Length: 125
Image (cartoon, rainbow, N blue to C red; front, side, top):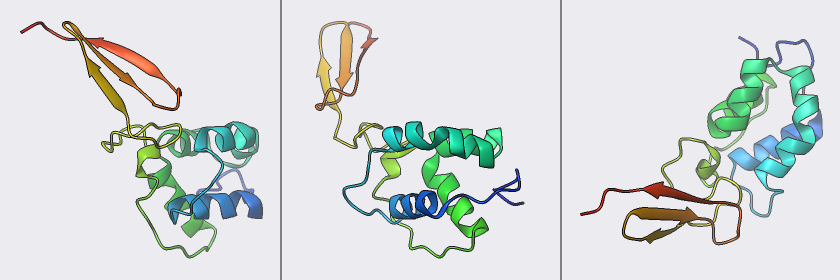
């Protein structure tokens, strides 16, 4: 099965970025920002399912895309936190370690860089 099922190959600059992510290169443009900038081009070249997998499970989908384009890479888990189901306890936006604050009936989870903040109700003891 080929990743570029719409018949078009990704551009070299897109492939370079994807390779840099899967190899764990430092100082990359944040994934969300890159995806927002390149989303339209990706949608034109990849199937809807591939785009969704790339958005939410990039460390699973990027290797397949690179293999389909004949690009060798050395996988790193440096950006594992990008996956929506990551257990790394890092912010999906910037990779910073999450902060937790427990109150009587609430648990606050936030990014120290301000990317997000959320609250969950917890049962009192």
